[in-house]
Amino acid sequence: MENEDEYAIALLRRLDDEPTNPSRVDLGRAIAEGGRRRRTRRALGGGGAVLLVAAMVATVPVALTALRPDSSGPDERAVAATVPATTGPAATEPAATRPTPGMAPTKCTVNRLPLPDREPMSLVTGADPTGRFIVGRTYPEERRDGYPILMWDDGKPYRIVLPGADQSLTDVNTSGVAVGSGWLANGPQAYVYRDGRVSPLPGKGTSAAVAINDAGRIAGVRGEGAVDQRPIVWPDASAQPVDLALPGPDWVGHVAGIDEDGTVVGVVWPNPSTVSADPGGSVTPKDRARSARNPAAGYLWLPDGTRRELPKPVVRGVPAESFRPLGIRNGWIIGTAVTYAADGTEVDTPARYHLPTGEFVDLPPSTLRPRGGNGQGWMVGWLPNERLGLLTDAGTVDLPYVEPHRTAVGDAPVAVSDDGRIIAGQSEDAQNVIQAVVWNCR
Image (cartoon, rainbow, N blue to C red; front, top):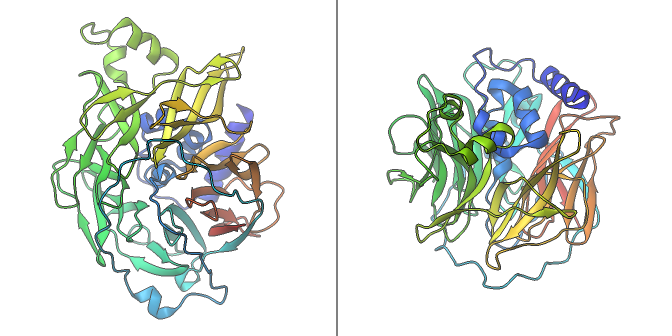
C-alpha cells in the first residue's frame, strides 16, 4: 500500500494544474479496471476520470502504417487542418479457430510526438490498431476552456475542438472516426468526430462514448458514478442508444470495448447503494458476498442479443476470483485475473480469453499490469519498478523511457498496433513533464 500511496502522490504533483471542480472519479469503472489503472485515475481526480478510459481501447485490423514522428516540429498547415474520415468497411465475424501469432518484436525505440505551439505537457488517450491515428490532449500553460484535443495522422498533429471541460477522445477506428466525451453543466456528453466535424451522439441525459469499430458501431455508458451507469450501444453515430441488458434490475456496469462483429465486453457489479441498503428482493446472498470484496464481473454482450458472464481463469493453479476485461479485438479479450494473497492483498495477473474457442490462452509468465491489448492477444502495461513493457507470446519486451529516469511515475503505454510494431502512450521528459510518445518496435 505504501508504494500505491507514493505513486498517487507523485502523479498528483505532476498534474497540480488540473481543474478545481469536484472529482469525477468513476467508482464503478475503477472497480472494473483494477490494479494500477485504478490507482492512477484516483490520483488524477477530475482531469483523469474520462482520460484514462482510453486504456480500454478497442482495436481494428488493417496493414500497419509506420509512424514517422517529425523531430523538427509540426507542420503549421497540418495543425490548422482537420482529418477527413470515411465510413469503414462492414463488420466481419471472428475467426472460428485461434489465429497463429505473428512474429513478435524484440526491441523498441521511443520518440516524442510533435506538438503544436510547443505546449509543455501532453498525453495519449487512444489509437487505432494500425498505429496511423493516435488521439490525445495537451496541457497549455494558460488553459482557459478545457483541454486542446489532438489527433496525430501518421505522426502529424491536427487540432480538434471538443466542447465542454475535461474533454477526451477515447478511441478511433481505422478511418479516423473518433469517439469520446466532454463535461457540460449537467455531466458528461458523448461525441463523435468524423469528416472534420464534432457532433454530439444522440440520447437523453448524460453519456460517454468508450469504443468504436470500423463499421461505426459505438459502445459506451449513460449515467455516471458507481450507482447510475448503464452500458449502451449506438448502432451508428446518428442512431439513438440502445441499453445493454444487465444480470438483474439492481446491477450497473460499464463497457470496455467492441469487436468488429459488434460483440461488446465490459464489467458489471451489484449496485453498491442497493446492496448496502439490505433491500432483499433481487439482491441475492451471492450478490451480497461478491460485493463484500470483489464485486466486478467480466460480462459479454453478443451480436445475437444473448449475454453472459465471462468465465474466470486459473492462475498458478488457483481459480481467480474475477476476470476484469480491458478490451476485445479479433475475438481476443484481454484483461486482468484477480486473486488474493494470504494477507488479503489483491494480486493482478494478465490474462486473455479467446472467444471463438471459449478458452483462456496462457501467456509467458509475467508481472505486467495490462493497460491495453491488440488483435493477437498481446498486451502493454506496467512492470515492477516503474518499468514499461510489451507482453507477447514470445515473452516481455521492455519499453524505454523518452529520457533516462530513476523512476517515472507518469510513463504509460496506452495502445498497441495489431502487429505490435507501434505502441502509443506517454513518457516523462528530463524535467519530469509527461509527453505523448510513440514506441517503434521491430
